[in-house]
Amino acid sequence: METTVKLKYIKQSPKKVRFVLNSIRNFNVDRALRSLDYSNKKAGRFISKALRSGLANLSDSGESNYDTTKLYIVESFVDAGPPMKRFRPAAMGRATRILKRSSHLTLTISSDKKKKG
Image 1 (cartoon, rainbow, N blue to C red):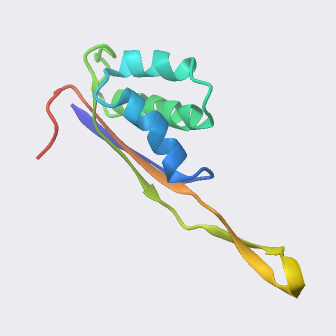
Image 2 (cartoon, helix red, strand yellow):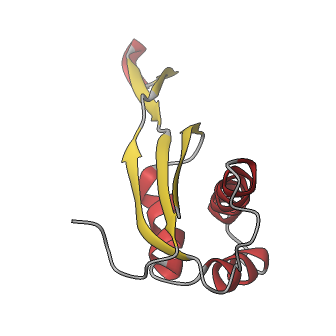
């Protein structure tokens, strides 16, 4: 039993999301959710939302008899999404560009602890 969850266009930089994601990598889902619930990082809310969505996907696909302590985060990564470009006035009549970065999050939840591949 395996499911993949993708959360796109997160309005936070990939570097900040990756920091939280690295702290829960290879955890079981139950431990990861408990850890994210007490996290003070904004990215923790997004990752928790994706994990809960993955659990809902498992129950919708007919896998109703799963145990969250036996499900593991097998694969997790963050890619850069498209940046929003904003301009800010600078000295001597110039303008500087501000990039507001976004992220794409991908999580794979499986009952096997081994990584794919």
